[in-house]
Amino acid sequence: MQDPGKTEPKPSRLVELPLELQGMIFEDVNYSDLNRLCLTCKTIKAVVLPKLYHQVVIRVPQKWSRLPSLEGLLGSTGDGLKYTTELSIETQQSPLRDSQRESEDSRPPEEVLAETKLQFYLPQISASNALNTLIRLLIVKLPQNRLEVFRWEHSCELNVSTLNLLFERQEANLDILFCNRLSSACNVSGSVIEGIDQLSVESMDLSRGGCQWAASMLVENAETLDHLDLGFNNRIAHDFALNRRPQYDKMCASFAVDVKKTLSAKGLEPPVDLLLESVYLCGLDFRSVIQGEMALDIDFNDVIELRLESCPGLSQAFSLLTGQGDSSRLALGALQVLFVRLEDPDPNFSTSLESFLTSVRGLNHLQVLIDNALTVQYLEPILKVHGKTLETLVWDERRGPRTRLDASTSMFSPRLGNLKVIARNCPSLTLLGIPLDWEVISSSDKLHEAIARAFIKMPYLKVLNIRNLPEISGRSAMPMDYFVKGLAAMFVDIVNKKRKSTLLKTVAIGAPLYRDIHIGTHHVVHTAVSDFLRFRIYNIDYDYPSPSGLSPVLSEICKGAARSSEGQFCHAKLLCNHWLG
Image (cartoon, rainbow, N blue to C red; front, side, top):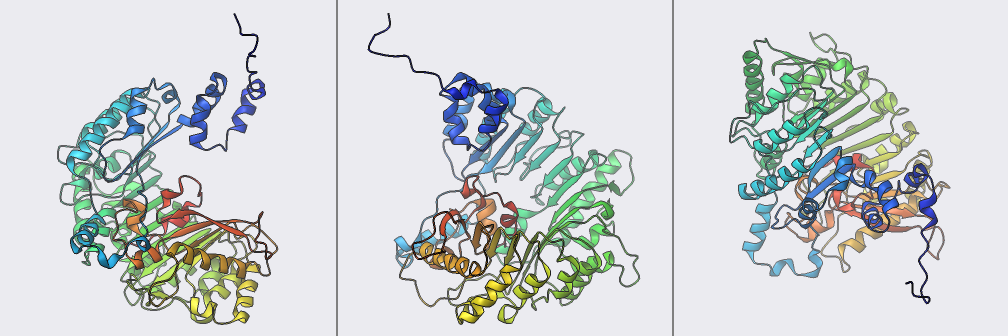
């Protein structure tokens, strides 16, 4: 019998709405809140589960002993897994330690040395085996032939047994496959499927035959591939950290040999013909690629997106692509997105890059990072060609990694020259990333006016990244976070002096590094310099200006690594443009 003193709680009016409207209401709710909603009402749960489980992301720290969230998922009924079409295993970013809170000088040398080694730490085999065991249990729990996307982006190796199980249960619909590191300790010749649309093997391993599987997958899926990522990402970064030149020739030769072996085993002759929409290469000689020396024949006339990281041979390749010398010109009429990062360019690189960029038309996204640059690139000829169509522009040149607070390595044209050129030629930019001369910025109010006038000419700008920080003498009296946030706030005030628009919603200071993006923010030696140079992203809130007037409120949404923003930051292009160190 019901207690007369109590009344039954009325169900929420929300559940009376049509399911389609409920879905629209929950569309922008974050995942943690969606998870709580699932526990409140069966009707809401039915609406929320498809969104909550559409993409399952397993975030695993570099060093771990227990994974409570994954273990909880494996121990649950797994009702939502029937909606899962994407499975990702990623690196969880560890919390940063602020070096201001403890004296770096007092830390034992052995502790600093241990952290130095962790910059490019790779998990032990036992950790990889344990993670693979858990992921195999999860794959078995997923409905068969439902998965469309599988991403392994953790530094632990993906075991062949896990890969075989994935292919056995999910081959029918799987069309996107990302594999950061594959264990090549055993035979991988049978671990191949057809029908892949997007293949990413960014960290092939020379010493353990890691090119063999990538070559086999490439040959087997040549007719269906639209997007291809190939490279030696981990190896390039490791060589950079040890200040040694990568074995570019060995990388190219090893991959070419494995491609030819695979073709021979199938009774085919090289090269492999590829019609691709996007190409990503890391550490592979680009001249050798376009000349067919790697047993690949890529039709660059259809390539829409081209990303080249640490690829030698760019000067010669750009000359070939533009038809200089005795070569015939290779048209790139479809190209819309170009990203180039190069260390140690040769003396001809600047000229060949300009010739190449002025020979193609209508780029929408252009991003160029040059390390150990010899000269500052003058952007006027390039932007006269692409300025009207560009939506994203990131251009950064430096003399090398910065190791001192009082010595910047960024390179820029004098007195805001490139900023003025960009403002004059690029009216449609929504994202801009460039270094600026902080000394010039702080030297004169007249220059503040010039900066403000420049940004008036970019009315659609939503994201601004100043990719360098000023030189400072000694340690700041305030924590680095407050100091850098103050710089960001000052520049936002300068930009908004003459702008009436509030479209500029995001400002970033500094540039991300490889170790932050791919390894985790915890695995870095913490010094005053590293804390100062840490990449930071701020949201600009115009709804609650400061009491003094127009100044908006800035709130930090990302520090150090892309994924530390926990999904709040959607401008992923900013985070791809990272230095090696």
